[in-house]
Image 1 (cartoon, one colour):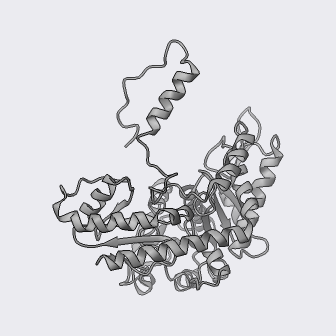
Image 2 (cartoon, rainbow, N blue to C red):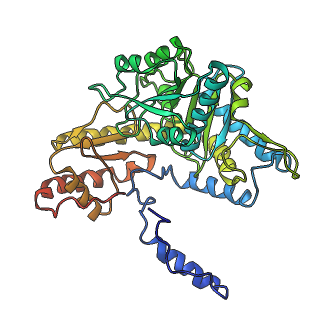
Image 3 (tube, helix red, strand yellow):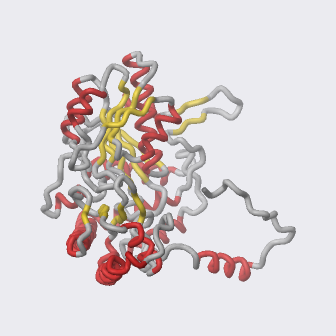
Length: 413
């Protein structure tokens, strides 16, 4: 893990000439994954050169500003409110809903966990809270439980790899501060039974969070494109908070996410941090961070405005066509897709699957590794339609030659 072992590097006594400096940077980047060439299947979500240009210009305009103080930079405060409002509209939040931008899905989820913990303590007297989430839920829930002192309780998965509703009913009790489900989950791309889980939570007076970090800017546009989408958003009774990443399928640069609260200002007060018992005056923030970069706020606002509904629908149709081709190609090779993924996330397994992954690495592709069962994992972006034919050809060759490979090397993209 980066940062564990520090290199033997000291601050130079004299500044480095600019030409030499950037030659070094460019040389370092040659070892990085080639996302521009469509060789990565997670982490970056390219949507085309026109989107890149919009993001870069917005970034440059707000490269130096600090999003901590909205009074000094009111344009940032306005853009953040508009990003939150546009996201709330996509996810059918009711009138009076509230929310804020965060640095990413992890912070959005952790804020939902922290708010639920504080509400449980203040409104229900819960002192030893639990957090009930599917086993497939993003590790940000476990991180939130660790940081904020909740006991993590995992819902087992059903045969379809979605949360087992019957098992969940036995896990929710008077200590439960929050129940959650994914739309879709990261490992398998399936949407948990959100209506059933939310109803269970509501019957116990417990908030429910839909983690739509992946699907928040996918599923609404699939629905607009005429595709069937499982119920997941604020139209589902009992859903009280949601998270959606603008820096995934909203195509903004890192880090830009949104956390939303159905109950508006009443709940947002639990997220806010206000402090004035120091000589520096009133300090207030909705974020976990203090100083925040302004560029991701501007980039998120810009890309949402630039693409609009029709632009996002166009890109989701590209994604769905590519994902369909990959699922079909994987099955033709005798591999098995896990679950029934609804959109862009695909995990597949088969004989010697990790050796297949090693051979794909050798061809310059970057697929994530999963376990239980061993599987390769990918997330389709719009620009992958340019490379899907070559990807499937290389996958076919890797499957044919996996028996002769040097074995699993525990590589991770």
